Amino acid sequence: MRAYSRNGLWPRLGRALFAVLLVAGWAAIAGTASASQFKRIRDISVSCTDGLTCDVSAYNAQSEVYTVIFRRTARPEAPVRLVLGVRETLTAGSSVGISIDGRTVLQIPVSDLSYRAAVYEYIFDDEEQISALIAEAKAGRELRVTYRSRGLDTGSSFSLSGFVAGLIFMDEVQGRVGREDAIQAEGAAPGDQGAPVRAIAAISDLPFQLRGEFRDSPDAACGAMDDELFANLGGFEAHSGGDTWLIGLPCGMGGAYNQPYAFWERIGSSLRMVPLPVMTEEGPSTDNVAWNISWDQDKQELSGFFKGRGLGDCGVYNRWTWREWTKGHVFILAESRAKGDCDGDPAGGPENWPALWPPE
Image (tube, helix red, strand yellow):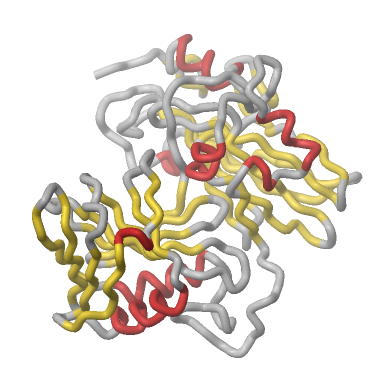
């Protein structure tokens, strides 16, 4: 058990930890981490990045094809992509078969799949065939994938229990409920409405004024990130009213369980960086980044949880509100909590830890 002394309301997580938390702002730290919304519904998992790219996934940990994912970005009318997570590459010249409850729905030549070697994923983009598969899966109980790998013909089975509820949750997160472009919670509203949160999936998609901050250079604020890492972490642009948007972007490489994000306000074509108020051992201060973030568009709230270690049983939790001010928007620190003892007890989660702000 790791224990740290306390000085007033502020837990001491150790000099090294606070050096990272309070002054690392723009530093690059080896490793990667990702923040996302997540929900488990029976045998289906749904995870969404802060840019609202969502995966509805079924798993079979015992198979070489171990996951089947239905992936969709947040933009209006975005197609669904079929993604197969693999442990071994599929045999060239072979085919992948997908059936629902014993009925063959798709037969896909491996040559029609694009392979992302860095993450061991095969991707299929035929919108019409994927729509047919989703329709069958909604009414089905089991999805089976047959394939050839390492010279053997084999198959993987996946439970579809919770699949429809997973689609509904994805529609809810992406703001599609009641719209024509919803997968499950469809309605009459046109699908070309502007999405309140837009995914930023590539550095090339950034406003040109910000791209220099992501170049591979020692003086770049958010450097050392390539497009693939950037896309996996998930950047976003959230509507704040009128022609004002909040941009949140992964900034620098994170550690094994901590990833920093930086923020800008965009009004039309004008951008300015937005600092975040924090509580320190010396009193109120500001930081340039938040860690392991989650954005709530309806409440216009940002939360961040810097983990003292991977278990999440210690660290610092902050929650900010995004509010209009005299000449734009600012972050207001609504809540700050911390736990300094890395003792294996999460103590009800960071939202229940001792308060740094407002004082108890």
